[in-house]
Length: 284
Image (tube, rainbow, N blue to C red; front, side, top):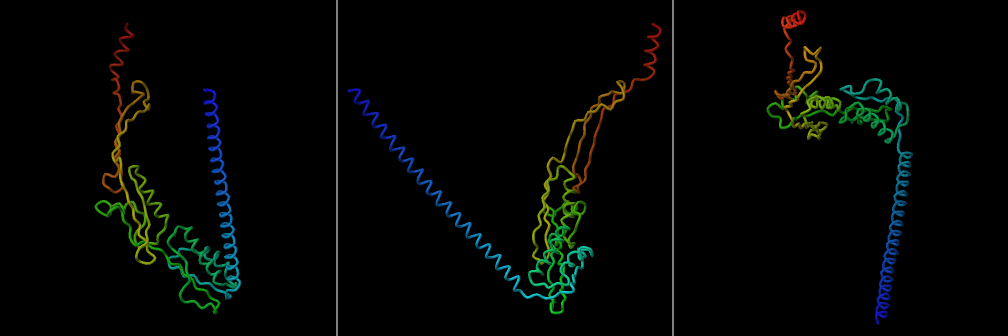
């Protein structure tokens, strides 16, 4: 009887395992089918995007071929702030003079000028086409629109914050914004280790103007350190010396620093006492 029960138990386990195996096999089959369907979908989507991209390239090429072009023998660039020097102008404009230019070519010219401005740090200044243009005269008029600073704010602009602008900010409102000036300002603030400065450039409501927002939080304004050195000349003058230093960052709130240090110096033994000891030793 026991053998029969054991046999039935084994048969049931085998059947149960077989069902589980079949279930797992079905799940794997379904998963593979789903993965294959997803791969086919992604492949079709990629092919469609590639076709759309090629179609767009062809359309742009057709527009470039079919667009109206004018022979330009002279290009005038209005740059009141002289953000670009003569050599830079000649290098860029020279590639487009005495050529047939269409809208695409003029856009590329304006882009080249703007990229040069950005490379020089004038990140909010742009080159654009002037309002008065008659390409039938073979003359193209362009201009540089400088991006200026409307105002600079430091925290809430209260108390010493206004003084910080005078001592630490290397530009001022109304000037053409140059990222290099702002980099210098960042270095001026970071000169003090206790400063934690962040800067943000946001558009102004005034066209072609920006607002520079500076936030600075000071931490560990006071620093106390223990000092030691072995600058002593001999044992009589104490070879090893100890001391203390105190550093105070921006006590006046204008990016200044005050530093105090004190080093111990052993008193020299009087020469008379040394002479007496030597004399006593010699007498003995």
